[in-house]
Image 1 (cartoon, rainbow, N blue to C red):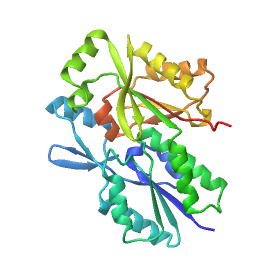
Image 2: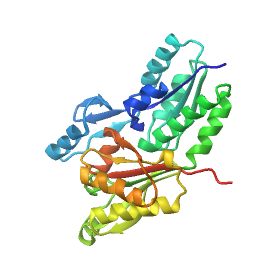
Image 3: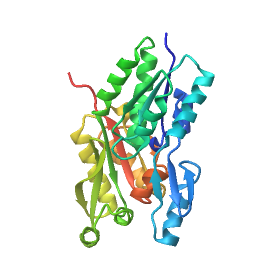
Length: 286
């Protein structure tokens, strides 16, 4: 029976608890502030926000390098020489990480790489679902695992509701005109994942509280989400009141005890402080 070890990038925002529970190996992505480049996870998002406030410049994010991946893969094989690595990659259209892993894997054997077409908590949801699938099917083949990931990624949905469009504007993802219009009209556009891309979606109008409740309502109404996969959270700065509002709103629609995630520095550099996110995997339809 093969031993499988799952690897992924730090941009998955997978929690230390889940890393330990499923034996996940996390390869760091990177954040550059000024002339210094740091591993994602080595500093808090508040430092990132402080840098923007002081300089008016957004930090630059970058994916894993081939060397990062080689070091991680070789470390695993040194401890588990007969293992098969299943690398579930951060959305390939958004970063170089997927290609970096492909390059690193050319010199090694028993590495199987698949594009999650997701990021942040959505990538975590896919990683955890895959780990559970392997646990339930220990005699599975690598090809069957990859097929499972390719199936589950199409049923994974993510929605982010920024508290402010300032960071999206600074990153060039929202024009000045759109930023001013949204501010004047109290519009909060949502950001969703579509075939691996982060794209603007439905706009909600009113207070952030009202928009948060309506976004949750639409999410759980539009998708038949498996309650065990439902996850909410957001970037640093999301208030306790908004966390409680999110959970209470889900309770009204029959979803109890959602899982929680905290976005790391990579996604925080795009969404800014106080953004809310909701993630889930649809149930199988028969």
